[in-house]
Image (tube, rainbow, N blue to C red):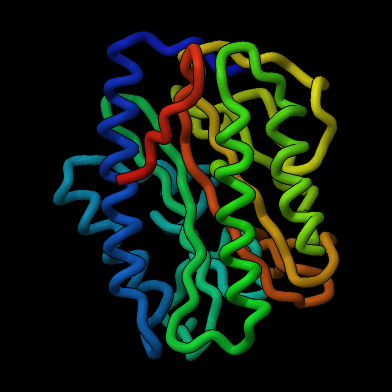
Length: 251
Ligand code: MG
């Protein structure tokens, strides 16, 4: 289903949903610590979202067992929270979360380095991946083409010689967690479907310090870089407006 133009009421529900999501990610960012298990982060996300009055969008989605995806270092996305998976100093921890409120869904992710970075390259990876998301957002306005977003993200990541994960892409969002169109993190300006104002999309660059190739791990979920290079992932749910955009998952 191609992402629909949202009504005023639907947009308002997504603003609330996105505010809760951003608040939970901020809490997780401040709480993530060396020695903590990824399941603990999952449980904090579950209880904080309950307190705020939202429902988790990922739990049970195609059978996913957690409310939060926690992916570390060479794990790009879709890491399953586990009691025996312990965060170490310098880990790049990617936290991807989804919220349902009044039947409307938002989706967002951040990557944080816990403790002291093991290298300058890790810091650059995280910073540039986040910046590439904002470069994509800067393209948005009524009538934008998907390729305009893709090219802006790719330009930023290419300039810094980062690998761009191709097997996973951004997407429409709102009534469903994943709506059409796909929004790749590479592409050509002036190509692809047009997006109208009051449509809502999730832009989510995934970048690596090595090559772009990934595989799915033995658990059937975790997406891992083939060369085991470290990766980062940032995502926002965004409302397209007449002249620009409103990031719904930002506090
Ligand atoms: Mg997403």
